[in-house]
Length: 284
Length: 330
Image 1 (cartoon, rainbow over the protein chains, first blue to last red):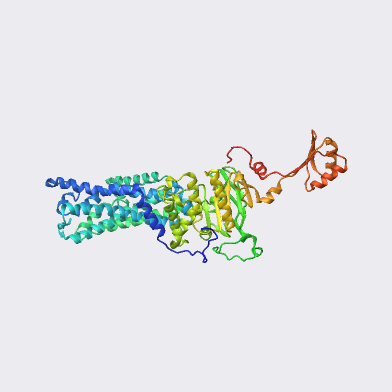
Image 2: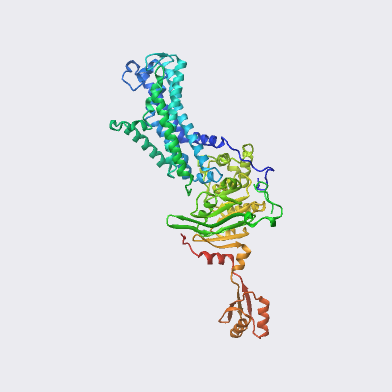
């Protein structure tokens, strides 16, 4: 091809295109490290289910949901999600967020994306969209792995809600889906914090560690009773309220408050990321 | 010069009707950039006419890359304005940049993607590119830089020369009005350097304006129609190669046993700074022609054993302007 090999019509700009977002998702999914991460996320419910199965005769006193696991396999994904919201899922989004801007800056690919040109605002929109997809991907991986192993080992008996009533399998599956969506939103909100941190540095690992510190600090503050006034504003405070979705009927108050806090975090930190990145000199 | 049909502004066939400002592919006024207390680029007034092959020369650290980053909107200057293809940057960057292919400070790609996948990613990011022709354009660009055979290899397995070629291929994904190539021959062996030179020459023949930076004059000298020479953040010389060659001071050197008489003759003719040393007379003839000087010498009965008029080479000019040696400025 040559420069003179020019098509007759001038190139037209498309207003929207999903090509860059699809490329982002392929980049995330194609990276070996991320595939290993997903494997680890999926291993947790499997280990959980097998250990309960092996010791099923005296399964009392385990973590939340664990003693209910034997009655319905769908408690496996719920128990696993409860465990993984502590560290593993935040760590997964931290790694993706570290790659998002700091990773591209570190490789130098950021300057080539910007001169394509990709406007900085558009880049942040696409990067955040890919983080949201990554959040759903991670949470869904845990849920699907848990549901498959749980149903395989414990069957699809009626699911006893926290209110004591019983749900048929399809309705129970619906509740698990609600939990997946809720927790994905929680992790995606954390992703916005990560995106902001990612614009502050050219070292992806630094951004990852900083977001983990942010998460762990939030958990610690959430556990200090003297800081009760602060708790409703902590990003992690309502994460475990997903259990409310397993009442009959679902208890929405805490979940909706959690979603509200998530929305505030996502909006504020995305805007901070934009404010930081829009006028920044790219010298990497 | 044939202009590609892709540009936004219609170009009249008659070049003389275009006003000079719109005719510049790159234009900066008073461009200044400070990093902390260090002045990286100072009051840069640069003009790259359309159709030119502009050699942007200067030692390492003289501000070439910072200037290129400012042109492409990656770095915001502290003062001054810049425009690409008549579009002010950064306000109309979205209109200018799709017609600009660039190579900035070496290649940079995702190491675990293949060369082809890396180009596909850049093409996917481009709102102006047509996804239906992506494969053809990507393979065309790879072919043009001789990388088609290694298209499916991971980038991390590429040698430095292959990486450099891939970066050039990325600049050729779409038809370009302007190519900004920062040190395109860095890391290439002499064979690769020659190939890149041919590539740049053929791109220029196709009508693209090329801005090519280098710290080695010899790499771009044969290519360029225009030169800009940077030293310590300032553009110390700029013009066509012809103008810059002519800007050097011509000297005349006469070898003769009667140097005193020869010196007197030359001085009478108006040769400046005449110096006579050990059978040689040197001076600066200015606009005097060699034949008139020889004629005057012979008329005066001065035996002339040798007569040489020299104009300094571009290399001499470059070294004179930027200094010699390995010191990194800035």
